[in-house]
Length: 399
Image (cartoon, helix red, strand yellow):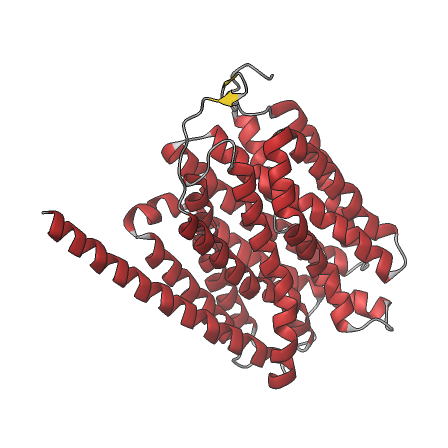
């Protein structure tokens, strides 16, 4: 439909939101199976097994910006469709493989697929929609990510009780979403080009604000990814079945989704940096709760707080980045978002190692990361107060 105006339909939105459910699925579906995978490969170290859920994030961090730039060149929908196919094939491959290292190769390609999905879904929302409609759809996207965690983690936990292989079959959902996207999505209308000159007016973006957004999602992902990575081992100390890991992480997903759906009203009432301060404080409380004696009640409350925190952070960052995007840069900006998000997930493993060496327990690990989250929340709170005072002084001077 090049050269014709394409107006996204409800089916288009559904396709984008379903694809968005996959954005945090790099390790989500198989995370509850980690203890079982460790038993299946007794010669593999825990850190090597953990790469099964963290390697996709490294792949995204390496390729996200490149794939985002590629989508600006050849089209977001084309790249999204190819990415969904790569995601499905590479994801399901883990069901059939019998060697840790070949499984890890497949996991790397899963990451490449997610890099394209993340960059293109958010970029398409930024180009298809404007104003408050865009904010609404981006909040739906964050909710879809939370629902994805609920459905995929719970399903993965249930399947892991049968076999460590079965959770890999969940990645076949990529084929269904590919078919839906194929019939419902078209490339956004591109600006006219005359004699090789793009007549779209230049729009400057705030580079400092974009960097802050990247740093924010990077830090948030380090803290949140520790939960699917280490909660299954934390629960195994209680002799809990694998499905409980999926259930608790699903609770986090529900709270993420509910909070995201309320984001439009929340963001209208509370300034951006105040929102981030509140969100990181919620994350900090969530992680610190896991330092308390092992209890299903404490874990459930912890997941509620974690879900609320991420339900605020994700749409805050994505709406801010979307406000800085235009057609010719949206792929690169959202590719950077994809890179930062998943570099944070991969870095979680690197952060865990020295903290575990010092603290010696999963409870101690959660406490240290929780305290760091609280400190970051305080920093954002102080920043918000500083900006309020600065803006107030500017208004007084101009008056």
